[in-house]
Image (cartoon, rainbow, N blue to C red; front, side, top):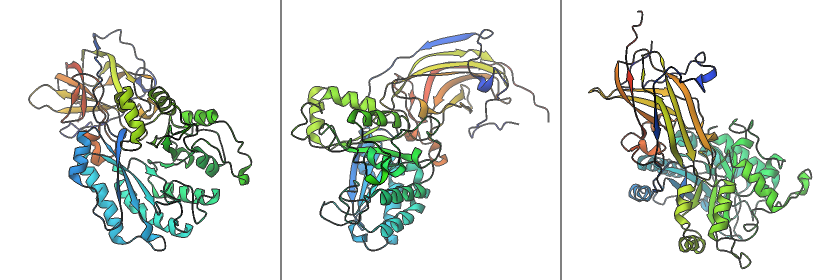
Amino acid sequence: MYKQNCQTIRYLLPFFLCGFLLSHCSSADQEIRHISYNGTDELFPNPERGIYVRYNSVPGQSGLNSASLEQDRSNNITQIGKSYYIEEFIHSDFTREFLDQIAEDFNTARKAGVKLHPRFRYTLNMDHPDAPLDQVLRHIKQLQPVFEEHFDVLSFLQAGFIGAWGEWHASSNNLDSPENMRAIQLALLDALPVERTSVVRSPRHKMNIFQTNLPLTPDQAFDGSYIARTGHHNDCFLADETDVGTYVPHVYPEFDNLEPHSIESIKDYLATENRYLPMGGETCNPRPDAGDRYHCETALAEMDRLHWSYLHRDYSRHILNTWEDQGCMEEVERRLGYRLAMLEGAFGMKSDAGDTFYFDLTLQNQGFASPFNPRDVQVVLRSTGESGKEWTIDLPDDPRYWFGGSDINLNYNLRLPDEIPAGEYNMFLFLPDPVEQLRKRPEYAIRLANEDTWEQSTGYNRLGHQIVILNETTLLP
């Protein structure tokens, strides 16, 4: 027997109705209402995408500040880059106090309704040392319990640790050799829950770690393997033709099966990879030969091609100010990551409890990328009566496959719960964070880019439709 809400119920769609997973069912016997939705260009916050700010700290220093994060969120910022400068631990393990400081940063982020992507770095200077490999691996192992406890507000991890700024070059301890990069990256992935990724500085790093220059296939995407959980970040976006070496293969002789290839072929590799992985970073000051590469036309084209989800707000202001002057900055802010908008819907008007009703909704992803972490898709039915009770139906769709620039069609005959009372019900689309402690936090639900559909108190998106439940089903005891 289904359990009635005050607490939202969840149940699986039966496979035996209207074919597998109820998709593409006939509406011939139902009265259908058709709705067109108005889009909006409004800027608003959505989880795990968009402009981010970075906060730097050292052990013993005050951590993230709730008031600052709440102010960031009021400016549509939901991702925080947190860099930990850990020079004092080059030859020693992390202290309990430092691990507690990191944990408290995650707690502060959760309270403010944002997520973190941390980076750990031993040095901020090309000529200063990083840590020996065995010490790095011990540090990563120490971080594992923190990551496991707080992964709900861990968006992804920047691989860090190696060399100057944690950017995987200029290592004093040979950490940037293929063998050591592999050891560190796999240790990071082992320390993270399987739902999260670690992003490396350049495509050549991933190619050399996994000894292949082939991008992820659809079958590999989200399968939990090391290679499927290794993404990319670019910290010199648009600064010159190669983004200051980002697109130069630098293939190591130990792996002679990796053939050097052109800048365009590396971008093709990223364009395929990043359909399934977080991609972003920051610009840096343009080099003398940059020409107009960093201007709006190229910037928008490359963020679209490479599926950018996040971008640093403060660096390089030279490039970001150029976008402001040329008029594309608001488009960048709107389209970073996903931007989902409803186009049209067709819904059944009446049904009986325990029976099915027609549900057909078309959305469009107007962003550069798709959501890169797991996310649920649910239809919520809320009684218009005094009780206001809600019933929830899970859809089998995975928004990680709602790629940038694509239309998405949710077409089902949805089965109503046997025990839903007769009456009228408002319908909503709900895209919550799947982690239980965030599921009811509206700050972590996806808002659709439509006029007058967002319900801020719940994180629901109004579908503008009421369904009438005619008869209750009497269940045998």
